[in-house]
Length: 87
Image (cartoon, rainbow, N blue to C red; front, side):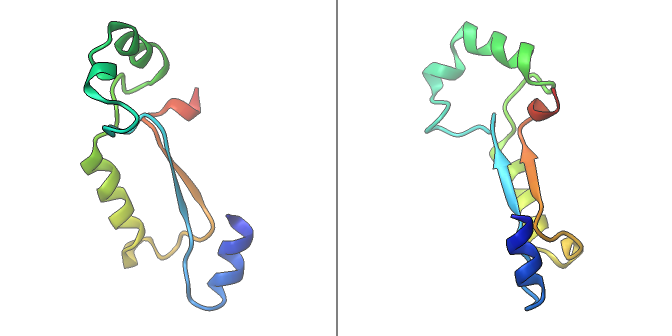
């Protein structure tokens, strides 16, 4: 990501990535998974937020990265995961 970001920045193109995990998504976390007590316990044990990141939170972050306010980020990978990667 850094190499692509640096290369394209010279052409005024910003490239970043969102590394998602534990984001509310019906494909990965269908209702029967979310309702499972073992999954709920895993969220509480492994994810500092203790919950899935909301789809709106995820979308708002992506929109921010596309905005002029985020023009200082190039070639970065941003984890969106409820704090899971920091553990």
